[in-house]
Image (tube, rainbow, N blue to C red; front, side, top):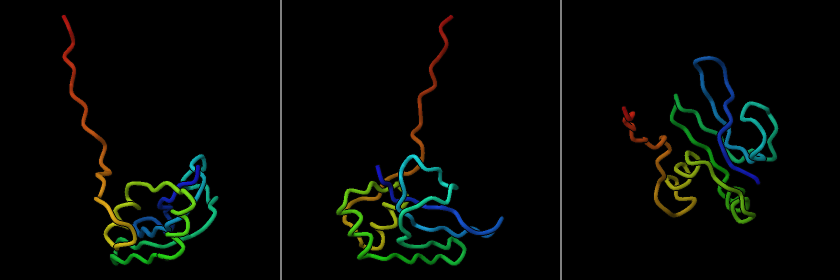
Length: 97
């Protein structure tokens, strides 16, 4: 299955990210991707997205990571609500004596 997600590039303490389309089985740092559809610089706060290309890949059935989904909702590429990308809390089970 294909997935659209962030791939970190850049040096230590200077993060830059690419928005890439890749196979879900490939590791994030593997460098194997099918297409680059955008970039994100968190220090400058800039996000560059190729909207037509993203719409084409979504039409082909690419799944989005939570963070990429939130970027696309914020920049009106897709419609919907933002998704919480934080892990869900689990209740602490008390040990039976």
